[in-house]
Amino acid sequence: MPKIKKITFAPIFIKTMAVLKPFKGIRPKKELVASIACRPYDVLNEQEARIETKGDPNSFYHVIKPEIDFPDDFDHYSPEIYKKGKDNFERMFREGVFSQDDKEYYYIYAQTMDGRKQYGIVGCASVDDYVNDIIKKHELTRPDKEEDRKNHVRISNLNYEPVFFAYPQVVALDELVNKVTANAPEYDFTTDDGIGHTFWVVRDENIIKGITEEFAKIKYTYVADGHHRTAAAALVGKERRDNNPNHTGKEEYNFFLAVHFPDNQLKIMDYNRVIKDLNGLSVDQFLAKLGENFTVEKKGSEIYKPAKLHEFSLYVDGNWYALTAKAGTFNDNDPIGVLDVTILSDKVLAPLLNIVDLRKDKRIDFVGGLRGLGELKKRVDSGEMKAAFALYPVTMKQLIDIADNNLIMPPKVTWFEPKLRSGLVLHSLD
Image (cartoon, rainbow, N blue to C red):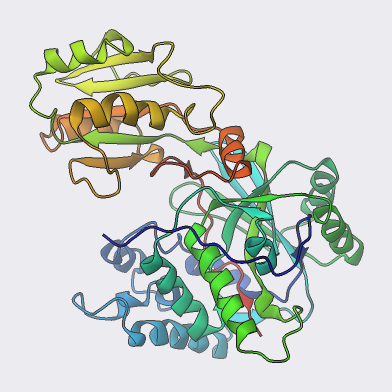
């Protein structure tokens, strides 16, 4: 397993507020956008992407996952892969599938899921803000995944996909967004998963100026989803400036594509665990040991979902149990110690099941909340897994507290939905 690392740079200059700038977006034709747009590169595997393209040469998977255009056994990290992604996009651009706006704009990207809407401001974040920790992170990154994304940027000279950022809600920004979204959108479509995607171009110069000025008052922004893409953008920007003797800091490579959502509109879903075995314990022995740190209540065969922080659901041998952490098993004053994933690791996985390294141990797997607790039951009932744990979701406040304290979350904690669709707008580094 490749090493995990956190990127650190020496500060380039000191400043204390966030930067957001408009850009000349590269966008698809309105009548083609619904077929072009796709889920992010890391949400599905190669075979799933092949199926989703459905023979459509303009699916954006041909750009962000160009391995689908090669045989199954082809090296996904070969130079030919990255060149193919670039060639696929350049062909679409030549054919008029994509074109570039002639002026610098912001864009508003709204997503609707289960009746809930979130409105993101699409603009360019600053590489310097990443370097100087104005953009806060909460996850470690893997060098191999960084290098993969860096190669896409280096070879294409584009940010193909935006990163997903959060910012503390600002009423003045809400009002500016409302002014834009009162008008007819540029794109408006619903994907097969039932999620609505609506997209506006911000052409009003006063609103553009207002967005820029309001962002300049924000102290920190936060990476919600896309740590590897963010890190890759920062590293490629640093490479470009190191190789440019006439670097000024205003070049387009100093900025990268991001969608910024106010924190009060975002929802983090639960990220659950399934376990292959009980480390030699019988179910009764396991439940007895759990009783040392948890109040254990049998709930029966009907799916039981945790209702609050520090409550867990356990599914084993056809029954659901509610596990409530006892006082003293957690520290509500510690941003990491308060997390339910920490309690589960410290009081169950490590001491009882001998699962210590969540990134490497093959006896544990992770199930995103979008799949539901029915997926946990299915995997246990099939015999593939012995037990499952459902967790109460992390809150945005917990994420921000961790990032503000320059701490790193344990593995597999946050699952944001809906995911950003790729292919709605691209950013050129030229």
